[in-house]
Image 1 (cartoon, rainbow over the protein chains, first blue to last red):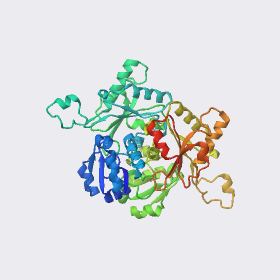
Image 2: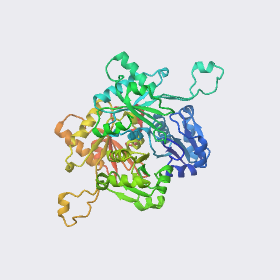
Image 3: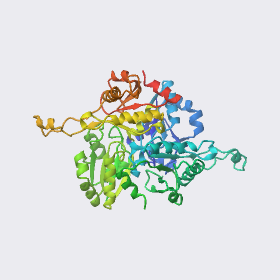
Image 4: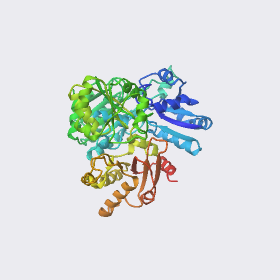
Length: 269
Length: 269
């Protein structure tokens, strides 16, 4: 009779903790939130290790039918699996609060998150300022916000982690008109290159010398996996690079300690 | 022939991931870094689950004899276990760099960190500014630094996570003169109450209205464990509270979103 929010880590079916796995195995129903991140394994792989059917929960389900989930947890144990750590996103906090309000017990099993996995780059985690999110322009969001976040953090000598947009299963009107209407759009993941271009576009408009061709930055792909890629260099250098499969993120360093400089050298080759 | 830096999570022997456990089981030697954090289980409990002897590595060993560790990893697989996520602290980054410089393969297995586990409080993680560290005054550190961090973050509307000091096995001169000379001092863990008093002391001297008796803050203890305690309230209210066993941390919220306000209400009772 508990709603368990369980982080399953960043990469594959083996990133769940022993504690998480025990709970999944004894839960009455298991959901996987599959719209704010992606794994590098198949749902089948999860099911194989967990020994359980894993039900996919998309944005629509979680945001609109969160109460169904909470109701289920009032009648039995429900494991709600989240890629990374389970309460990094607002949506999951909302679920947490809904459960508490209905008097349903909630328990959280933590796991790795991209917010700390970026530590591997070698920039000290306590010197990161506010986190920025760069989204695809068609979302109607303002790409000036991340530019301002980088600006403020830099002013304070702090590093900025830019999380990059993921678009899953939200067909545009045009998509719906096409012959594949009804079928979900292919998920889109913003690349390091697209993120750099977005920041350079704002720079071109505002000219405040916050993020130029010459700005040192660090591009990351697939953190926490065997084939992760990290590369440090000027924005224009990284623009020419291919970071491969998702997920990507971009770091704009602030003031560097000598040990941080030394670490970044590793990723410049 | 690899140095594995493996996060074992925040609480007990069941917080390791399946991936981490597989590596530990096949490693030639297993170390546990035991001076930057603590677990809520015994080393025996770890050894029972891991099926391996776990060697304790204190600050002295890691900082002065890190090369021994790296050398061992050039001859076989060495698992270096870290409470929380393995590269959140500078020391471990140093180990990472030493290994790379000596041409020894390093691999990182991520896990939960207090930096993201604080998400459970309900304040959005991307709205945290720089992280502050509050240390015991006798360390010779300046307690004004965390005050300034809170000040800067608040100005930008951001939350501040204050990590609290841990003193392990570093006997003072006085201690050494006493009859128990040679025996390690009992570890000391800063409490939420001590942290609040430290910030109030600076406020009294500087009077900049950054952190007063009336400042809303959130005290946390044992995040990630079954008996975690979270309480939100004015500084003076939290001062009167008992947060119990370590580890503690303190959050000073910035500007609150309505959902964050709602979440904090949970912890005010």
